[in-house]
View 1 (cartoon, helix red, strand yellow):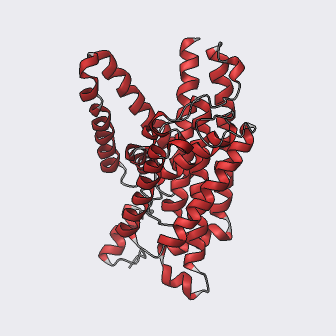
View 2 (cartoon, rainbow, N blue to C red):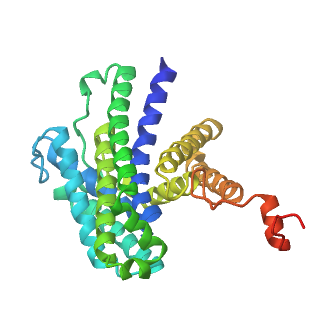
Length: 326
């Protein structure tokens, strides 16, 4: 029973990460937008939902005591608007300049969460966030399984929605902009308009993931949204395969398994005084795995790979043979 409960707990966290990775895959894998500030949008969603759903607190603003579903919808709306505003202001930039700008946005969000104590609780964060099935907390197995069912349903809905969008005319325009922007513009498509849309939808999905995580744990603080979160999600996408929604989900589960497993291993092998140093081994483990994946499958586990012609056909082409008998 304990193993089953931990498995449910593990998969719940992994699927929350997969939601963030799905949002990043829409922005980068489908559209080619280099966003390294995704931790900021996750934080926006978490704090928005927490402020909307927690009870009234005289120590800070917010505390509207709304239902959890209202908090999730609010997180999607605020996260999408914040991403759209960021997109309008920054998407004229390209590659490394866009990366620097989005990273700056994430730093600003984290600093606001850390210093706006009247709104966010400052370094102490926000506690007593209502949890779905909170009445089952005394039965960890049922509690974890119930949360897993909810997060799985949300992830499935987002996954199917993104699969539909990627195959729709809208998704084909995004792919065209990623592959050849000038050709897409020559067909009358507005590159900036579509990019802002993709950035906003991706940011809304990331904010939803932050809201789910906030209600799953019941507590949030600025330290939850440090740049290491961005590193984790990018590794998940690279391992799974950029451009593949299936790869985003599988990569998230695989990388989170290695991250959690290495954390458990270091806690067993090292004393409490060595834990801070031992924690760096988690990043080392992820780095080694990333190198192996890139060497074996440069496009990730499920990334699009160009088809190679058969050896015989390549040989004929290379030697100039037509394939007919003389």
